[in-house]
Image (cartoon, rainbow, N blue to C red):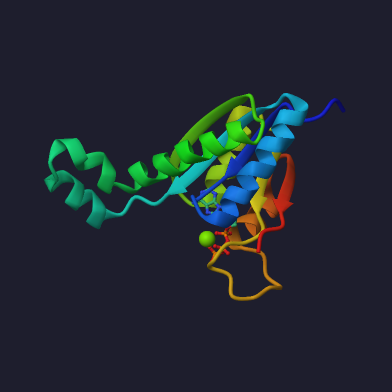
Length: 148
Ligand SMILES: Nc1ncnc2c1ncn2[C@@H]1O[C@H](COP(=O)(O)OP(=O)(O)OP(=O)(O)O)[C@@H](O)[C@H]1O
Ligand SMILES: [Mg+2]
């Protein structure tokens, strides 16, 4: 074992997910691994309609894919700051846990990093649904960063 070669990290742009991004970037930096930042988004028909009616220049702003790409780009900046040398970003439509697992498979990642939970979790005893599902189905190691 010579350490990780490719690390996938998930973020929805939240403060807690950003902590996971920094940790993943730190890990990738130590091993000289590539970091793949992934933001999953849901395609919403209501937003798609609004998008079609908006002026060309601002169209990208009102799509969830636009927001997801912004989160991913912001995470790229954080990741470089935290020491990752080689960073790729992806915004993909779908359920976050499914997307993270698929990207890990597609890219041959050897580690997936996620935060333990975000603002959505009421109980301190529960993981968020993303780390819970990723930990059960991942094709590789999983690092669950303790986020409060
Ligand atoms: N849209 C997303 N795309 C990629 N990764 C995500 C996304 N949402 C969450 N994650 C990852 O999962 C971690 C935990 O978030 P999760 O959404 O599971 O917790 P939560 O918001 O507390 O729970 P829930 O959403 O079930 O209420 C985040 O820190 C992040 O690493
Ligand atoms: Mg959530």
